[in-house]
Image (cartoon, rainbow, N blue to C red):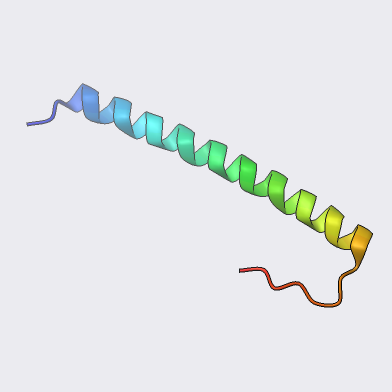
Length: 47
């Protein structure tokens, strides 16, 4: 059986990872928006 303390530590770790990923996502979106404004491509497919 997994101990409660271990589980809590893992959850905190995962939450930090998600927060970091969200920050990166925002940063990348900002960069993409800036590049898009600068270049004004005809068509840009973003998945």
